[in-house]
Length: 226
Ligand code: CTP
Ligand code: MG
Image 1 (tube, rainbow, N blue to C red):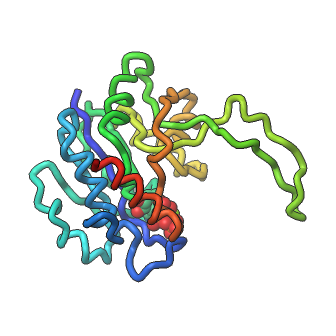
Image 2 (cartoon, protein in one colour; image 1 turned 60 degrees about the vertical axis):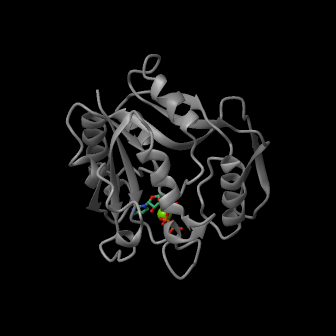
Image 3 (tube, protein in one colour; image 1 turned 30 degrees about the vertical axis):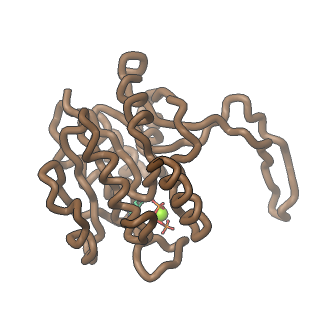
């Protein structure tokens, strides 16, 4: 079965607060989205990449990757899940959808391979994730600690997240219609009663969110290029 990568890139980067959406900021010689697309377009088992863009986007077409034969763009929506759904509309019925945030440029081929290989163990789909390392505290309204949360079975959800495309489309649609807050693909699958697998991924696969993350992404990309 073909693997189609879906890249939600229609966000505006409000927490970054830059002069343009964060996926178009430059790190290590090219845009964040350019780095992300390079990782996906060069992977031998990814046959196609669908990128969801903001309706007012006038930067994407200036990227060197824009004319790549494996790449198609669609218009994204108001929420991340709307953007993913827009891309799923054109994903082939029997393909696997590998959904990856535009804002995670430090993804490695090894982590993609690990997630793809996990389909044997997790035919229902799986996500890259990382076990929580720090002691976790729950806060009360005054900003005081109300409890220490046991971290034994706690993971950070990362992307890519890999699911059968048709099923993901159905459950994302249904979960959104039911008013569920869908912050990642797995949450829509969970809502439908499916338990996606957890595949341990690299800690440097960060989502560039705040200005401080730019330096980190640069460091990780430089290290990977060596
Ligand atoms: N995204 C999208 N469509 C949206 C919102 C987000 O395609 N309506 C994408 C972003 O471009 C990003 C990914 O989803 O690649 C993860 O979202 P996030 O990190 O929250 O990015 P932004 O929404 O752009 O940032 P912020 O929340 O700070 O505004
Ligand atoms: Mg956002």
